[in-house]
Image (cartoon, rainbow, N blue to C red; front, top):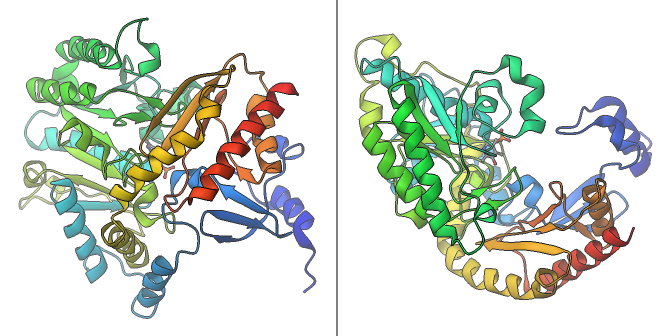
Length: 440
Ligand SMILES: *Cc1c(COP(=O)(O)O)cnc(C)c1O
């Protein structure tokens, strides 16, 4: 078969692939990269051009592409069993992963899905089902944060609050209640992030006082609201939310799908607030960006409410690929790397170096709200033109960096394997892309 090269791949993708989160017509002006392979933090296209994957392939990649240790684990598992259904069967990778996630989160049994949205669905259903099992079936509503994001499936979209994704499907969605976001950018002049977070927690209390009797759970992205544009907030909000959820008998669901596995500087973001949620949703980085997998862990008390002789009392939810052995082995390899390479400690130093490298960006006259937590950096561009995100994306590509701004917010979420010289290159790329896209 004749290899027709990159241009043809782009033509064929436009003809055959419906790309996610994309107005397909825009691919005429802004074609996708045709990626042939990956190497560490780099993506290499079919013409051999290299791009630094500065957003970790939609926030999933932790230890680089084609990581030898994760590759080896998957290859080893391929020689044993690629998949077996998890109803009526079990296997070592899923047992070991469940044990390790439990000891890391302090939560009990792990229930598996295939992606983040299904983890959200599982947590919402489990929470409402718990209340039904304990005789409080009227507690089946949900509270979430303004500007929050929990996925695109109909249930997850119901607790999401991003108009661009949500409004079109509004007639399909179940009503949920939104409370003010503690996004530190919204603090009054002179008000600290902590004081603002506590003020927002008061609003949560007011909401709970009205709705607790009909509310199953409050679902939240801990510390960073990713999809709205890396909105960051003070951990005091979560500490107070935990107290309020206890006080008003409402579950706290921590959606750590984006922030889990070290993104915010601790293995899980909730650790920074010193809290344990009733449910934790994990996905994205869980397999190092290799295979689709999500997990929901919950307390022994909630688990126990499903345990009994009546079948319908059990959690009768399933996905065909639940607990896929290859994905679990990738996840175990990721946890091994966290341990042997002391990744959390190493990232602390990297985080400081990267912030230093971005000093000129942070001081740029068109940049405001430069913010940073763990391995996430973000800033907002003042008076950005409507086409800013596309222009910036293309200007950055010309400098060998793959970045996709969210509106006027530019963010970096590099794989943890980012090296010192790559930080310099990344910072220069951002600065040049910024100047180019603003000059255009
Ligand atoms: C990405 C994301 C999801 C959805 O995960 P998918 O795998 O894309 O379905 C849910 N919640 C948060 C916080 C996310 O960032």
